[in-house]
Length: 320
Image (tube, rainbow, N blue to C red; front, side, top):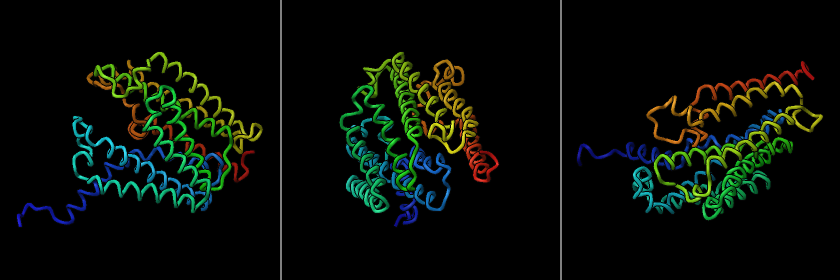
């Protein structure tokens, strides 16, 4: 045997890293929205936290199963792509039959465990799965409908998290979640459109129907909606929102976070901070923005700390 032959341990490590890449572990941050139910309801108990963790794990399994399915379907075209050819399935690091089995186990297991936990959670996961199928087959090619589908996916995650914890969400919270998800979807399309203009070709057929002026007008509408709905929710029980109106202290964090995100997608800001960058900007991937931009990350941490401070004070009856 050659001294350079891979050991069983190295093969296991190689396969593990291949699956980490293929399952898009970094994008699991999108599923953190399931924790919004106990956070926004000020309900932090063993039941709510364990339910949220379960919902998070199941949505991670479901979303990763579709990354596998999409790469299996696109394997031939990915092999001809200069970048996508490095994906584990296209590169041959993961076999197609093996990937199919893993995808079925992940999706089937997520739905089964979801229904075992609660009908609401199982329905949310099933609805998410059907939405992904419809999106990849048809909806992603339909202008405006594509970003609505993306937003619906986030709403289903939030509803799944609520079902897993038995928490009833405020309708203002649901509307705010939908508007914020639409905002992120529009920002993603803006980044893709700028990138396609720089490279001289559009990576998605639907981008031929979009224009920056249209996306900017859409962004304005959903930004206003996000801020208004969040402000109403944070105003307290009078408007059937948060448990205390002191949640209005968190509004500055929301405003700064949205404005910071818009700044990062501004062409002039991109040119100023990255004069050699030939990309449309980083806002094509929200999960990378949250983890990679320090001011935005600090804003998120500040918002969470303020929420917990208000919640603790409310529980201890320091504020009313």
